[in-house]
Length: 359
Ligand SMILES: [Zn+2]
Image (tube, rainbow, N blue to C red; front, top):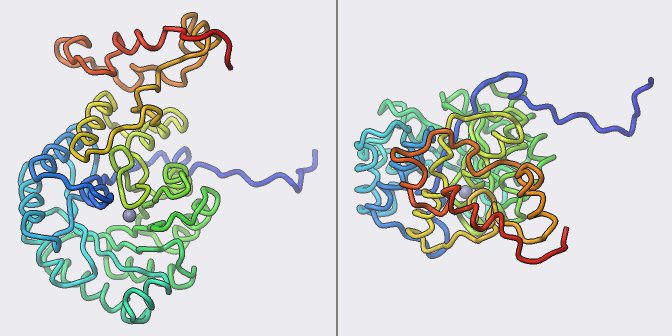
């Protein structure tokens, strides 16, 4: 049979092929705290970092050292608290930022610079050569202090491809551990995200991280597309907290990879609801009841047809069970935890038909 010329090519999963691990970079304490009106107390930051590290999140962006002494105190406390997760400080391409980050004792730094002409001209009032020079100075300063560094391109998705690749190649030559691609203004859709990450990976051999925002509700989808194209690192935040409409949500990325792509990141999902609730309280940003993965209604059903199916077999209307990914009950059993996602409690809601009909 002749191939149909109208059929699009497959968006093949790089990871299904390569079987290499995807690594999570949680930014709840940095981009998450940049959510308008959100401020965490230092003790809350330390607790959030501990919770995330304990469930197996690989790296944590724990703050911006230039902000204030209190920020640096929290960063230093987290950095010396013996977490399994690596700690990163978010820095401008600026020597003083690198110095302050080093004083906090973090494991590495993110060196951020804008790469779009709009940012370079209007925000910095400079040119591309200036940006490359600043990044080189900051990278050299980090290397001199023995700090591994990530080079991050802010507004990468609105950057011309030629300069984006020039910047990524420069990052590799400077010794960056990886290159972070930021869809700072959410101008990508998943198809374009796949293509741009693929192009970067065809040009450099260091790892690539995708950092997506959610202005069109596609942060998770765009991140998954980037991962599928071969990005090995992905920025996430609890409950999707972050600038404006937020970042890709930790719980969505982990569960989508696990359930849809059969890619288990080794993160214990059992405590997702607990962590989401803690961050919701600390940020004073409630979890919407319809929120994917951790919302109260994830296992709630209203229509009679759905409820009937669920009673016969939950797989009729649930793509994963409350227990999926939570193989180890806490010490003392499920009841001991006393949390809303305890399956015994969830069942009370979930199997109660409220109204006949529906679809
Ligand atoms: Zn961001």
